[in-house]
Figure (cartoon, rainbow, N blue to C red):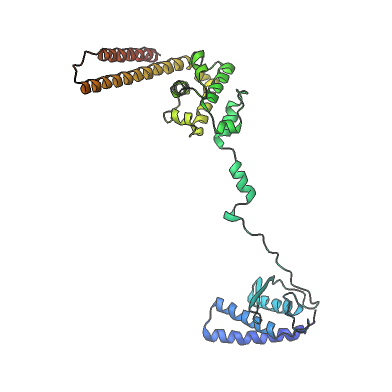
Length: 330
């Protein structure tokens, strides 16, 4: 590496700077023009510096001459990093830190390490993977609450993120066995009928009764619970909320006092739904009969459907009144 007269370079630098400053002041240039002009001065000096590395060799950015020039420029411009451009080759050279080297010993200016490229979207691959595999908060809430009562079925993340009606039935049975909650809510036949391949009406019946019971016992508003979403598995968060409320119904002392009333109300609502289904069925049959008679052009016989509908309505109202009377007395 070649040596250079430091004092000579400094004098040349100062003279060039004074000349350039006078031009800028005359032109009324601002700070950006000032920096650009100073950089031009540095390029001129760098291009004019003697090359002692060998004939035809570019002046390396880390040479003694460059280090001295950069040190002088950094004191003048107050810049931390300088970018040198080799005009003869029309390309950018390396970006180097402009911390002041020891000019007397000819030390090199330290190089700034190149930072690693930013991940796409400013999210590291590990963070992205953790985000994708993160357990939903409503799953951990179910595990931390219901897990204190239920050991089987296993409350795994996979099971809770995609809870089925059969899984929910097993959870209810485990809670009932552990705490006695929900005694009399379902018959053995009702519980046994619920399976993955069970009729959708059987699944709806179990869910309706369970939601009615839990809502009454915990005095919670579960009106937004959609049983068909639970059956289809499209809203696992609401199913997890139901399980969390079931846990509260099993352990809360105030809720325990409402177990009996909750079972009665759930059964009454179930009977009303059954009667409503029967009414719908009868109405459908009556409508079909009317259409058949209209097509056949025959006289319509008197149908017992009207009296049957009235009887069903009367029984449903009577049943609702029986449930309402004890509540009013309480």
